[in-house]
Image 1 (cartoon, one colour):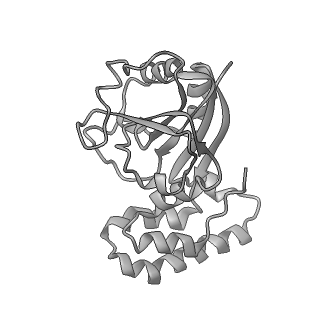
Image 2 (tube, helix red, strand yellow):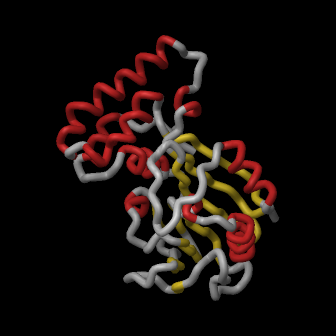
Length: 226
């Protein structure tokens, strides 16, 4: 996989489009990481998420969407915590779940359903936020550390390929809390300062992994065990 090294320029371009810094950094991670191919199920994404601009797709892609909200592009309207997706077991090559796990309470049940749907060796990929504001939709239940995510995935029969902390350091983590209050063009002024401050402390204390210590989110790629 290519190294994950988001640039300030790429983040600023997305900020000017109105995208939060954390969302931009999670999206940039997916460039060149995964090719959406075959049967793919997006749980909760509505098929319109900004991550689709960064995920590569091939001609075999057949995408279906399951969501609790009956909006355009949704194939199955259901509560994933209570109901099975009406697709056969072992029918999906990839299951997506972007910014959904924090809104769910019955994680064991949901992960067992994801495992049921995937072919052996199929991928479960997505994002879960960490150092961001509480955002009910309609609920906001949890934040998981990397260790907790790894334990959860292993417990439910997945092999962990990647759990990547998304962020840069304490200054960007603090800046994210103010993101919603900042007029998009002002990111051109403030974000470079914050970016450089985190770069400076990385140089001062190179032995510390500030990105892992102050993660805005985690991106994950896990595989159903054969």
